[in-house]
Amino acid sequence: MRPRSIIEKIWDAHLVAELGDGQALLHVDRVFLHELTGPQALAALAAAGRAVAQPALVFGVIDHIVATGPGLSGSAREQAGAAFIRSFRDLARRAGVRLFDLDDPRQGIVHVVAPEQGIALPGCTLVCPDSHTCTVGGIGALAWGIGSTECEHAVATQTLARRRPGTMRVEFRGRPAAGVTAKDMILALIGRYGAAGGASRAIEFCGEAVAGLGVEARLTLCNMAVEFGAWTGLVAPDDTTIEWLAGRPFAPRAAHWEAAVAHWRALATDDGARWDAQLDLDCAALAPQVTWGTSPAHVVGIDGVVPDPAAAPDATARAGIERALAYMDLRPAQPLAGLPIEAAFIGSCANSRLPDLRAAAALLRGRRVAPGVKALVVPGSTALKRAAEAEGLHRVFAAAGFEWRESGCSLCFHSGGDSFGAARRVITSTNRNFEGRQGPGVRSHLASPLTVAASAVAGRIADPRALAPR
Image (cartoon, rainbow, N blue to C red; front, side, top):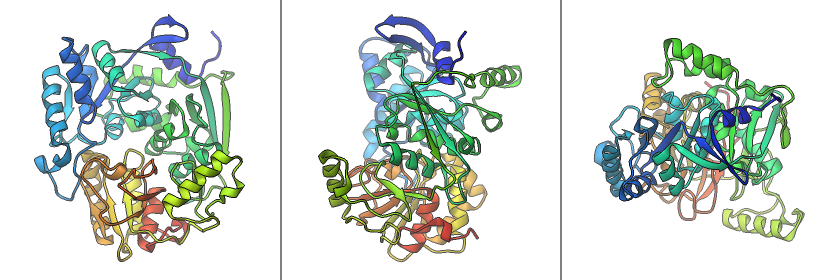
C-alpha cells in the first residue's frame, strides 16, 4: 500500500461505499447536537417517522443560547433560549439521546465537552451542526460541521455522503517565544495566507511548534481551521494526546485502552505521503497577534500598525479594507498597541480551557482591571469551571475585576442574552470578529487570553510580554 496521511487513513477506515463522481459514504462515529439546531433535526426525523439509528452514539448539549451571568442556575440560565431548550429536552428524551443539560456536571460548550469527556477520540469521525466542530481535530479526530439536513441524515443512518477532500500539510517551524500561544500561531497563519488559504482542504498541523503544544492548545489551533477556509484540521495523536485522554469518562478502559492506543499510534502520517498543498510558518519570531479589522485575516503582530488600503493588491481588497476600517473606526498606520478598549472577554470554544484560565490568572494575580473596562471570563464547561475553582482561579479573576461566569458560548456571538452593555471596542479570545458578531456595533479585536488579560489591566490593547506573571 502506498504511503498515506493521517487524513487518508481515517477516511479509508470509515469508508462504507464509493458513490461515484468523487462522493463517498462514510460511517460517522459520533454526532453532537446542541439546542440551537438539534431540535430541528430531531423534529424532522420524528415527523418523517424515523428513529435515531444508534442513540448511544448521539450526544446533546445545551450551550449556545444560555445566559452565563455569575451564579445563575436552572431556568434563569434559559432566558432567551427557553423555547429552544425545552423543545430540545423533550425531543432528546423521546429519541433516547443522551443530553448534558444545564444541571449536568458535564454541561458545557460542545467542542469543549466532546474531548474533555473522551467522547471524541483519535481516529474517530465526529460531526455537529456547528462550523467549529473541527476543534476536536486537536486530538486527532476527523471532525467537521454540518447543516441541519445532513444532521438529520447522520442521526438516522450514522453515515454521511462526502466528497473526498483535498489535503494540506501545514508545518509550524521553530519554538514560539514566551507570551506567544497557539492562538497567535493560527492567527498569524491566517494573516499570512488569507482567510481562504485552507481552500476547503483537510489540514494536518505539524512541526516542532505543534509538537510542543499541550492538547488544549492543539484544540485551539484546530478550532480556527475553519477561519482559514479549511474543511477541517487535525493534529496527529502522540504521547501527549494519549496521556491527556487516559481516564476520561467515555475513553476506552483496560484491554480496550491498550488496543485503542495501538490504533492511535498507527494513525501517524507515513513518510512519503502525498499532499495537495504544503505551507509553513516560522514561529520563532512571532509576536502576540491581534486583529484590526472584521476578518481573522485582518491581523498583525501587537507591535504592528493598521494597514493602508492604498497598498492593497486590487480594488476588491482595497474596498474590503476600507469598509473594515470604517466599521472599526481606525485609520491607516495607526498602532494597535495603546488603542483604548471598553471590554475584555475570555471564553469560547477557542480559548476557555483550564490552561487558558491558568495563564490569564497568572498574569492577573495582584493586578486590577483598568477603570471603566467591563471584563468577563466564561469557562468552557462546568467540569473545567469546577477544576479552576478548586485551584482558586475564580478568586484571582474576581480580585482582578473580572466577572466569573457559568459555562456556555456566551459572547462568542450575540444570541444568548449576554451583553457587553454600552461597551463598543472589545478585546476577545473568541474566533470571529465579523461586524456585529458580539453585538450591534461592537468592534472585536481577536487575541489570546494572555493578550486579553494584559489589555484589560492596561485599559488598552497591550503586549502581555510586558507583564510578568506574579
